[in-house]
Length: 202
Image (cartoon, rainbow, N blue to C red):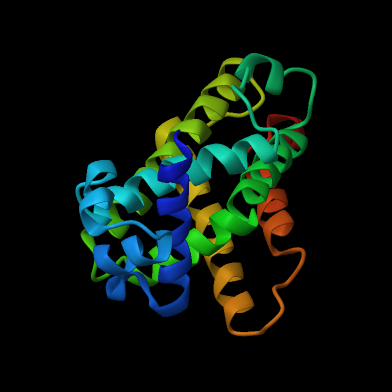
């Protein structure tokens, strides 16, 4: 990506963090970058387009910093306990979304999702990505006999949504100045494994 586009994305993120995404105009973005509004439109057609690309750019950068590459689901699920597999998968995701830039972005987007369609669409896209990744893990686990889900898709959806809800709750606690319970996520994973780990029932 050209440096100018990066500057525009960073300027938009900074402005949104200061006063909320809804207050940010294309003119403000252009002023912050130090270019004309007409020049800004040469790069992006709207503020929503900037936000959409911001999501893609920041997510890719946070994955790279967290060293999350393409997942080999067969390798991921081989020779390890269900608890180890799920804990590692969840911790990798948490590392990515709690990257400072992504954390700031999500805080902005989550505050706008009930009034801004683009914000809602981004969160829907993120949820779908997370659910699909969880499905891939769960299908690999099912094939290897590690788990016995009556409905893999529903199990994956419920697990992904529970993990996302816990992370959202941690975001809320942090913003409210309260401490999150450090073991809440692990306790959830442990309980999930107690129910679905075939080895636990032998």
